[in-house]
Image (cartoon, rainbow, N blue to C red; front, side):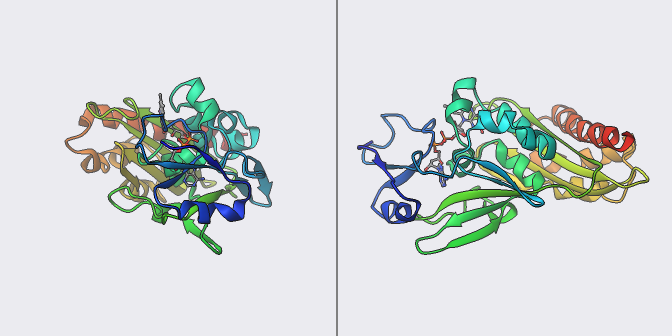
Length: 276
Ligand SMILES: Cc1cc2nc3c(=O)[nH]c(=O)nc-3n(C[C@H](O)[C@H](O)[C@H](O)COP(=O)(O)OP(=O)(O)OC[C@H]3O[C@@H](n4cnc5c(N)ncnc54)[C@H](O)[C@@H]3O)c2cc1C
């Protein structure tokens, strides 16, 4: 790794990234001195205005430099996107969370845990291109092989989530195994759902990360629960519908218990809010 170039202005980052072998460095938790010898890191950590969490009407805008520890403890995130707070609070060690940023968790070579929670929230990313900005729904940010949509001179400048309009919303996140392990299976999943006045599931989104590169919406689970009463039988069917996605990687029983716990915790949260 050669010397770090510190970007002074947001506008100059794309040009710096156009230099061969350049790569953004944010919290730097995934870089070591031994990382690829000719790698040329471009630090964005000194750029102003990229480390805030702000409510703008019905949206929450999160800067890519927000630390995972901040995200985990932020009152707005805990109230409106509890699965994201849970995901951030479960990344690595306290040291990794106090240095690691949300942008770095999303844009690394290995898909990070917050991706599952943000998929469940239906987040949007704002991406700085060489001359402009573009927005992308998180559903389209990774291709089926887990490669993200960023071009060599593009980077994430904002993560936006919608505050749920429905008061009876619940969300939960869970982790299976140890992130980064190659010898053992590992996964992260999150669910966000809303209940209508009759206690039926009126809206649901789920995100699943499996290993370093599989990151998808949990469409079968969503379809199995949407517009249905969340009875034990329906929850079991919904969880079962996801087994083919993890076939051969995580045992059926273990994965079912893992996912059922997440669905049940989101239901309990929504039911408690409904009872208030
Ligand atoms: C011991 C250890 C345990 C870990 N455990 C976990 C875990 O449990 N779960 C988990 O998800 N992760 C884990 N990680 C991975 C990592 O530390 C986190 O994902 C962290 O959030 C990365 O953030 P960073 O700011 O340090 O990113 P950096 O290391 O600075 O960058 C990571 C990557 O993202 C790119 N990048 C950074 N910011 C941007 C941006 N705004 N736009 C575009 N590209 C960008 C960089 O170019 C680089 O490719 C662990 C790491 C370590 C060292």
